[in-house]
Image (cartoon, rainbow, N blue to C red; front, side, top):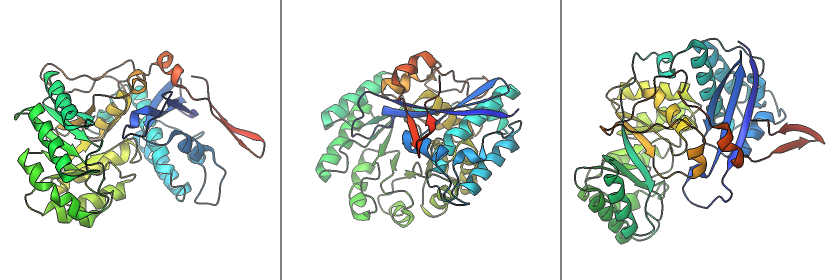
Length: 391
């Protein structure tokens, strides 16, 4: 079947706040071919990625992404790979390319799964999808008392694992951070897995991160996530060998396979976290999952938006039984909730199972997202080169 259209839909909450919450806006991708349509979601700046799809060519290695897609055939897994390779070749110097390609790649897998009537994980070579233990991913409270209350509420909701991140953690005093950590553990109880996400707050300041190790050890933190900026491999490696030893997680900032490979090889990570909506899609995410096997570290999805993105983020490691933890956002904005009518919810045993449906197994709720649609028009030399398509 031949690609007939590639459409982008910029969605946004009425007000976007200056907080670490990526669910306040979204960029959905719809690809139509052969009477079918596939959907994907980019973890990106929506308007920037739309521009990267339609921008004029600057030179031979800086073409708009549409150059590599429109009119191409999509009948096999190999065709998806060819399109990704073409984008990398034709848009090598377009630095937004991998973010935009991520949603496109996800939509292509969804489309192909529907054509071949298989879930994506089976197209990736897995025989079955193993259940994952979801950790309730949320922001730290504004103060330790709020963090305690959030942790207690989450455990009472049935979650066996919790992650707190961002907020004001790492931005104030060491004493404030310790108070948050201790409040999180008190609220979660001793039997709950507790992960801590520093949100790259120390950039590459090793000393600030090291000061928190004793407190993290005291609360039995399952991991410390993103203490440093993406690709700060020297600092990651040094902290991974420091005492008391705390397992490190990172990689969500990787926007291609090569970056993820460097983090795995040189960062001393115990967990590599990959966002299919940022790394270039499901295809490179699967490569990273296989590489994690080779290096004996755990692959974990990164997902903090919709259930469409959640399904896409789990597919690359769905068939890997030993990689059994997944991020599960529990306080997204209403926009992210409304994107799909299909919801992935933990079962009575607390584990999450991918749906046994074709493609992503997720149905986009067209009517629900209309109220979030941002009307966009891009003109070049007086000519309209992009306008918001009809849903």
